Amino acid sequence: MRQRLGLAQALMEKPKLLLLDEPTNGLDPQGIIELRSLIRRLAGSGVAIFLASHLLTEVEQVCDRVLLVREGQVRKHLDQKRVTKLALRLTISSETDLDPLREWAREMAVHIESVEDSPLSVEFATEKSTPQVVRELVEAGVNIEEVRKVRRSLEQEFMELVEGK
Image 1 (tube, rainbow, N blue to C red):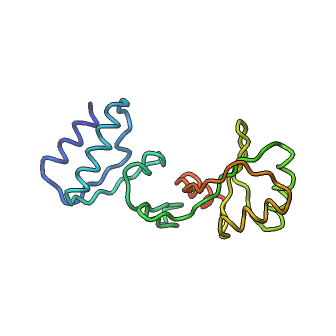
Image 2: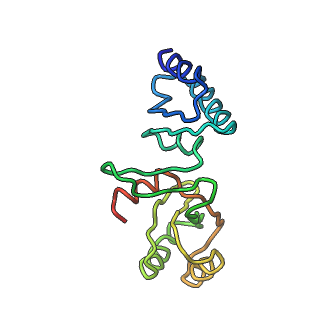
């Protein structure tokens, strides 16, 4: 209730700029959903909102532009309206396809970001076109069941920044 009261006090003055620091802290799930909706409505009405949060999935849901800050310095600016980096998610037929896939990735200097089971899928970012990647992987002996472009999450962007890549 303290979070809600503080927000209500800030909104009574009809601000043009609203600074929010960890606004969902202490809110129940319904309160979080209501707050997200309120933030979107306020932004749509012309209120500039600066939201500071460590909850990157929350930031993705409400922010148009994101600044990633490390050691007090802005390290990256992301425009969420534009798809920044796309990754490919491939579903492959079996574990025997992992070795040629990893070999291809090593030769092409592509970092495989995740490998998941059930269904067996891998995700990686590449500058190459999707048809070119599929062609190269099939030629390398990888049996591909499905290919999807996926938007890289803020968590992935942040981890890339933290790891210094």
